Length: 505
Image (cartoon, rainbow, N blue to C red):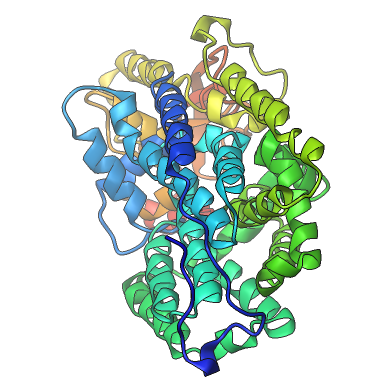
């Protein structure tokens, strides 16, 4: 049934009533089913990713916050890892579910913007065939949960613009509060949206008590995490410089926009570009015009701060939906036929990109940058092999040299040793959030040190060290599961003195 507004005159949209077409379930459901099949197949392949291993380890240290994330992913990972069997698909099922919800929400975004069946199908199809979603839905990752929550927030906001029902703004605050328990990026979205609305409208957005009530709810629910962060010196804020430094391996600021467009996908990229144009030029989309400058501002902020190209991913669907609505309203039928071959091409690209390649046929990365560009693949290999090498190294040592603890250079390595290891000494790492999960006791004067093969000896934490063996896995992640030394280290000082300086984000 077509909806119309009946709100009081003080709440009316100055551009007149905005109607919404019926939800195109006959189009959206097949797209969601195909996306589900692709996501489930991707989730069933290869091995646990480094971050997934870390989430499992962090889940065994319940806390109101972690140094680098909220508590939802560690809790999910710990629960999933405890399920019977050893199914990757089951472990990653939460990511698949929220991804499919995101596909449907993308279609609803087009509907809220006034789009009909074609626009809803294009919007949902672009989301389902985006390279970003293809990568993230196959892993239990913060981005796989964070992105659909952004889409839910934008659906609520766009619907508020259309209907002026203020409970939608409070609901957006509640979804924001949930997202803040996953990742802390969405405040940047709100700052950009509010700034854009003050210039391009609707200016009354900031005058709505429901908006600030939702913000207050978010702050209240974040209080335990904020207290944790304050007690530990605000480690989350230290991530910005570290992420900027790591971005050089994926092209840095120069390639931010090209990579972002690549992640948007074959269908999403032209719709994204056209959506920015349509939001500024189309009279029908004028009430939602502020979304275009908000998105541009969001991209600029992440470029300036050295963020990663997928950071604006949660706002791509609303701009793509606007492009789909604008495309649907093009008056020349021959132009609209372009959507058919482009959609087919996008689906073919997704099918070809699915991880059909057997592990034995995956090519060895030629450089650290190449591995970084395909980190979601190479980050899944070499962990059991690294663990066996550590176990064998300890087994060859005389009793007098047996380590009392293991310290790894990377949080991925520690998480892998905890997950796959049997009978190993306690495992620690000063890397990222793992550095806040614990540290070796001062009596652990001899430790096994897992470190990049290029690291100096004896290193900043060792009085003396010697290499027991080197580990190289053909398709492992450089400096993490391949190109790694296992060294015996004699600590140069008590760990209570060393650890604060060793810990790094």
